[in-house]
Length: 139
Image 1 (cartoon, one colour):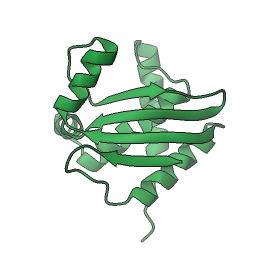
Image 2: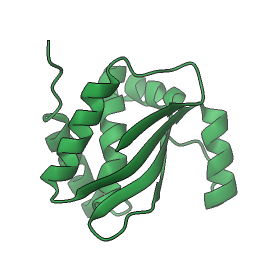
Image 3: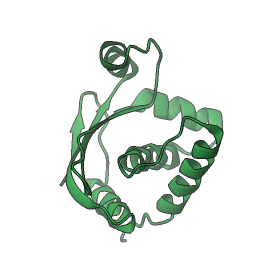
Image 4: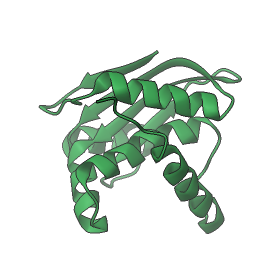
């Protein structure tokens, strides 16, 4: 089950469509969906987590805690809405596009994809692009 939680004023307009898409992404990677919690917050909230749990004194757009068991994906994914907006501006894409990238990024980490080395980062970006194309909103 995919859950959305809010620690700020932000809220997804289409939770059901986003959850359905993320479930499809999980299946497309031959994984099982466990319990995945998205927590939307601001820079200050995520910075505190970054310092406290990862000992990184920097701003970031996403932190994921992976509690997966075998092939079943479970975890908590914290997203700074402020960072997503700033990154969207920096990369000259819409907020919605950058948000989709960050949402799927956490899932891809749980699927085993990394992004620390150049080669891993290229693969991660390619997978993000592939999965973003899967997103559909029924009209």
